[in-house]
Length: 347
Image 1: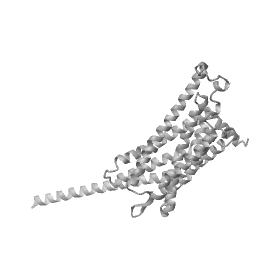
Image 2: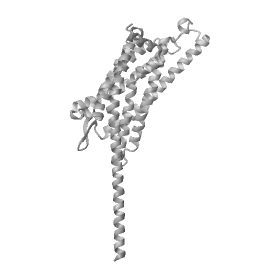
Image 3: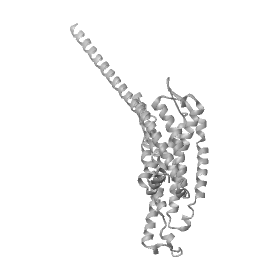
Image 4: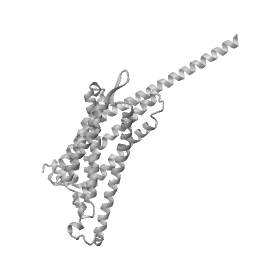
């Protein structure tokens, strides 16, 4: 009897210890999830308004500078005007609603389906147009840095306006699917979010975002940037040895100084903006790749929360290139700094 009693008491102790360990694990898991939610909330509650103010100021400063008479006749400046208009709209179409939702629990987007669809549509539209205009500005810089006179002559404001309007119309039509297949989805009894409907369409959007936005766009930007650098090096080589220019091209002051100071400054601004865009897009690309690899895995509630946290932090990092371009321009460009000084001094 005593042995049986000892065995049963030993089993009870082990059960109690296991229960206590499970309770400790659950409590630590709950604390960990709560800390992640707190960090995410504070990131959007504090960081959201800051980045909105910074982004608004940045876009306005850049628009004023690039619209000045000194720069507005340059095709690259025309692209930068369009680029900054889109960045300004993106701040209030995407960053503001997300900050209100995740930072202040103000879920007005999930309370109205038309607003939900409009927000997703404009977010995807502006998120495509902004890098598109950077890419077109890169193409313009490739044209203007070419050692071939006929190629340089193709860099015109008329072509820039056509590309801006044509690109806007194309992406408006291409992203119109968001106005139809976006819905308010329910994950839990008290959690709603606005996103694409699950199924084949959601899978298509996931792969589109990963392949086009995450991989091809940064690669295209990097390739065009390197091409521009190569053209600039060729120009310097021609300056050192003018006889490298083809005999049929007449050597004049305009051909030996193929790239003026303003064009060089615009090239530098463009290259730095491309680098910033690629750097801050990398985190979301990595998260998207991880989500696609693990999409069929069975995940715990804790792992789901970790994935959501990583995605929301990555999304916040993608906001930075839309909000800091004028401050980067101030740092890298003498022309931009001088124009800002003239604006401040009301000259």
